[in-house]
Length: 69
Image 1: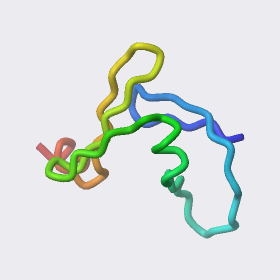
Image 2: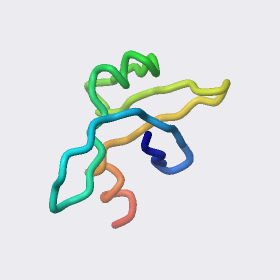
Image 3: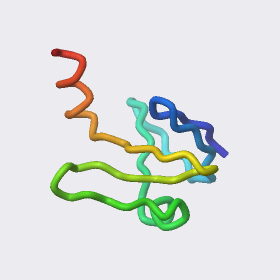
Image 4: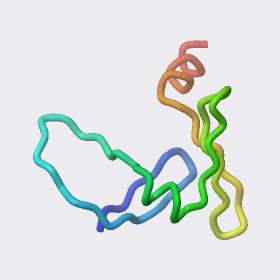
């Protein structure tokens, strides 16, 4: 089990671990299905509702542009 957080969104996932020189969490189809995540292809975002709270997960590229402004 791995705890992770993306801004305010916190979750725990059960996953396989692969040794790598970098640290990334790849959230694939099983996680998207379990969370009922909706992908907006035009905005490149995922909308999730967890415990009655709405979350919008932006791409890393969009986040970097926000920080640069």
